[in-house]
Image (cartoon, rainbow, N blue to C red; front, side):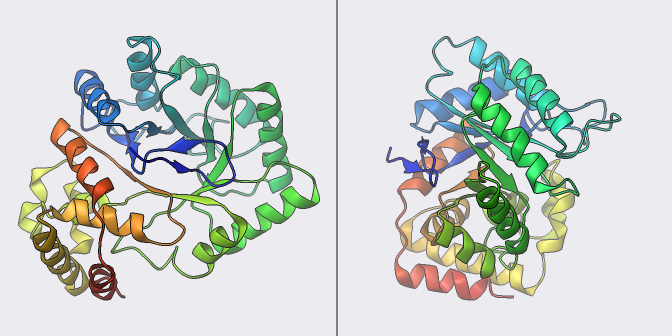
Length: 317
């Protein structure tokens, strides 16, 4: 499978990233191992997680996803060298002192993530959410981790154009490492935050982009056709907001483009992201092997300019 380089890093990834938020939430460890095996067997190589996955599940405290990935790596000797691991710091772990982007917490959090992953290094370490910590302090902490070999590259999630621009300016002025990858919410339905100034800044500065909620929590898979369908999944309750006039138009456009290519709506939605300027790879979750097989079709699907235009029009706010 053709690889894409993550911006200015020397890291090459296949065009779809596995979203590890499902581990320890909608799928158990055994199923997680199975879908990860399928993911790698089909030529993909990058996995996204966070120290906070999955604090929202009753009884969980965070770190469950990293732990499952670590156990999977341990059970498969040599696998660590074949995959690229993304994880994040900054979300509230609901323990005093365990949140944010302070130097103290980052230096502690990275060791805890490395222990759960059973790895000596994290390939791409993200600031999960912006906070009030000065960029110089946060980037200085990452400088320490890069020099120590604990992380290979750094990125940020959920920054707007102003925040990313400020962070890049501080890195340049203070001779500190700069964010090399951005992880924004971006999909056919949620476009306003990324398109425009933020996308333009990333392209200008050579910042790679890996999108999250790439399928709008499953809405763009076409599985849900009305609010009555939302009981099919644990994620259903977060999808109801998409059932408006624009959401209906998007599903119709996905169906029409999918019919022309004999593909499913999810595959078209991911291919649309891959066709957008500045996007390196979408992040998408899988809970069964069939979903991974769909990723392969999405990665190989080439949309025509007319296809992209039709999808763009349907998704306009």
